[in-house]
Amino acid sequence: MNVFKKVFKKVGVSLGLVPDNKTDEIMEERSEIKKTMATNLKAIGFSDSEIEEVLDVITKAETAIQIQKDNLIGTNINTYDPNPAMKEIFDEIRKIQLQSAEDVKSKIAEIKARKGM
Image 1: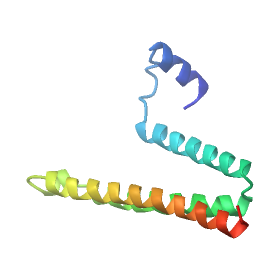
Image 2 (image 1 turned 60 degrees about the vertical axis):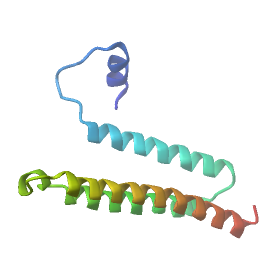
Image 3 (image 1 turned 90 degrees about the vertical axis):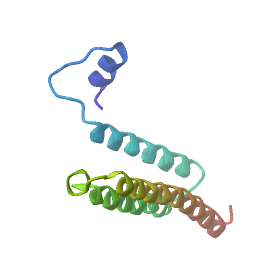
């Protein structure tokens, strides 16, 4: 989100020119989280390639989540009751998120062990 949108959003003013795109906002938030993680890892002595190893775990999880989201396309059209299918996919996304968090922790621990930290 650019600076002007942030300021207008804080004061409750809508530009009304272009509708807010939640996907773009989420992508920006994810990007900021990755930048913060990279900065924190750099601060404790991780190299760029080691940081990339950690971020690759996150990227793979994001891809797996997107595949699950893509499976939702048309669910409400092709099924009388889309709720069971949606719940199944949401549960799978949650599993991917939890596993990703564990995988990131494991990858960081693995790199620290390799470096003798």
